[in-house]
Image 1 (cartoon, helix red, strand yellow):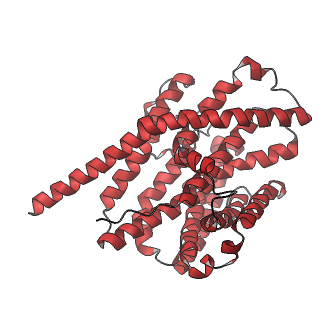
Image 2 (spheres, helix red, strand yellow):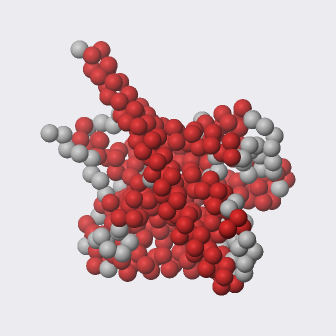
Image 3 (cartoon, helix red, strand yellow):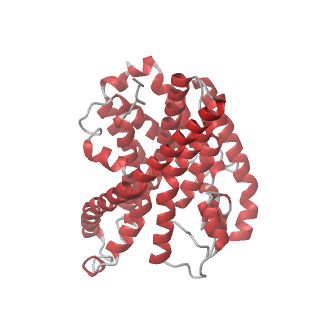
Length: 385
């Protein structure tokens, strides 16, 4: 009997916390007068995307090594088929949804749509949607474009990065390349598109974010080491996870660069926070089902991709309700209370609609991808025989 691919509950919980952070971040913008300290901590939720990137690097490497150990090789075309059918169908449906909910002011743009559908939208400020008056086909789609770039490079990366030391060398190389390219492009982008769009683009694009994937590869090899398994992470996983969460929150009040650059060579905030998130994942990997390793987080993690795509629509719907609109301008403690009530209502609603999307789109489409892979392999065997 064929051995099943190993399944790790902590990965689903990590994804659940990642999308929860993103929801918290975007929900905070609905209350412009939220007290500053609360606002600063809440908006750090945008680093949930880095948590997704770390989890992606770990799980892709796990799957790659599992297949190689089981069969002696890796079916690279099948790798891309799985990735496409895992992401593209729900992504394309979301693009239609947002076109209906919020049509672009300039009308349908075939180039913008094509760049988004082909996952190359993260390589230009206009295509990314951060330039003035640019159409953002799917909110948050920059991260999906970055993720697909990593997918495109992953077969080469997996073949070369086979140890922790190599992963560290890759991390150093990505930091240097990212800082160099960000520094070189800053002046041109600032002149062409303005300071804020240029700043956003350099933060979002792959050459800045690729170091997070390199950290994820380092994390994978750390997870494999016996000395890490028997370390303090195994003895006090929940305490360490809590301390790492506190460390992430504390970064809200530390002034660090926004992106890699040689103007200010200090580690940017997203790198410092990604290191804290690595500690969080290491702790969860050793935790037992109690505090952080729990069923609600795992459930949210299972539908996290649909939740990432759809939470923007849910927030738009909720913020447009009269019962909520009257409280948008509250300040102080009432604003904090409204924010908490908002999250208590939005998160279950996001979970509900995401579960429907997961069942109606994600599962059937990933099943179709598996069917195509089986048919392709069967055809190849028939041709050989």
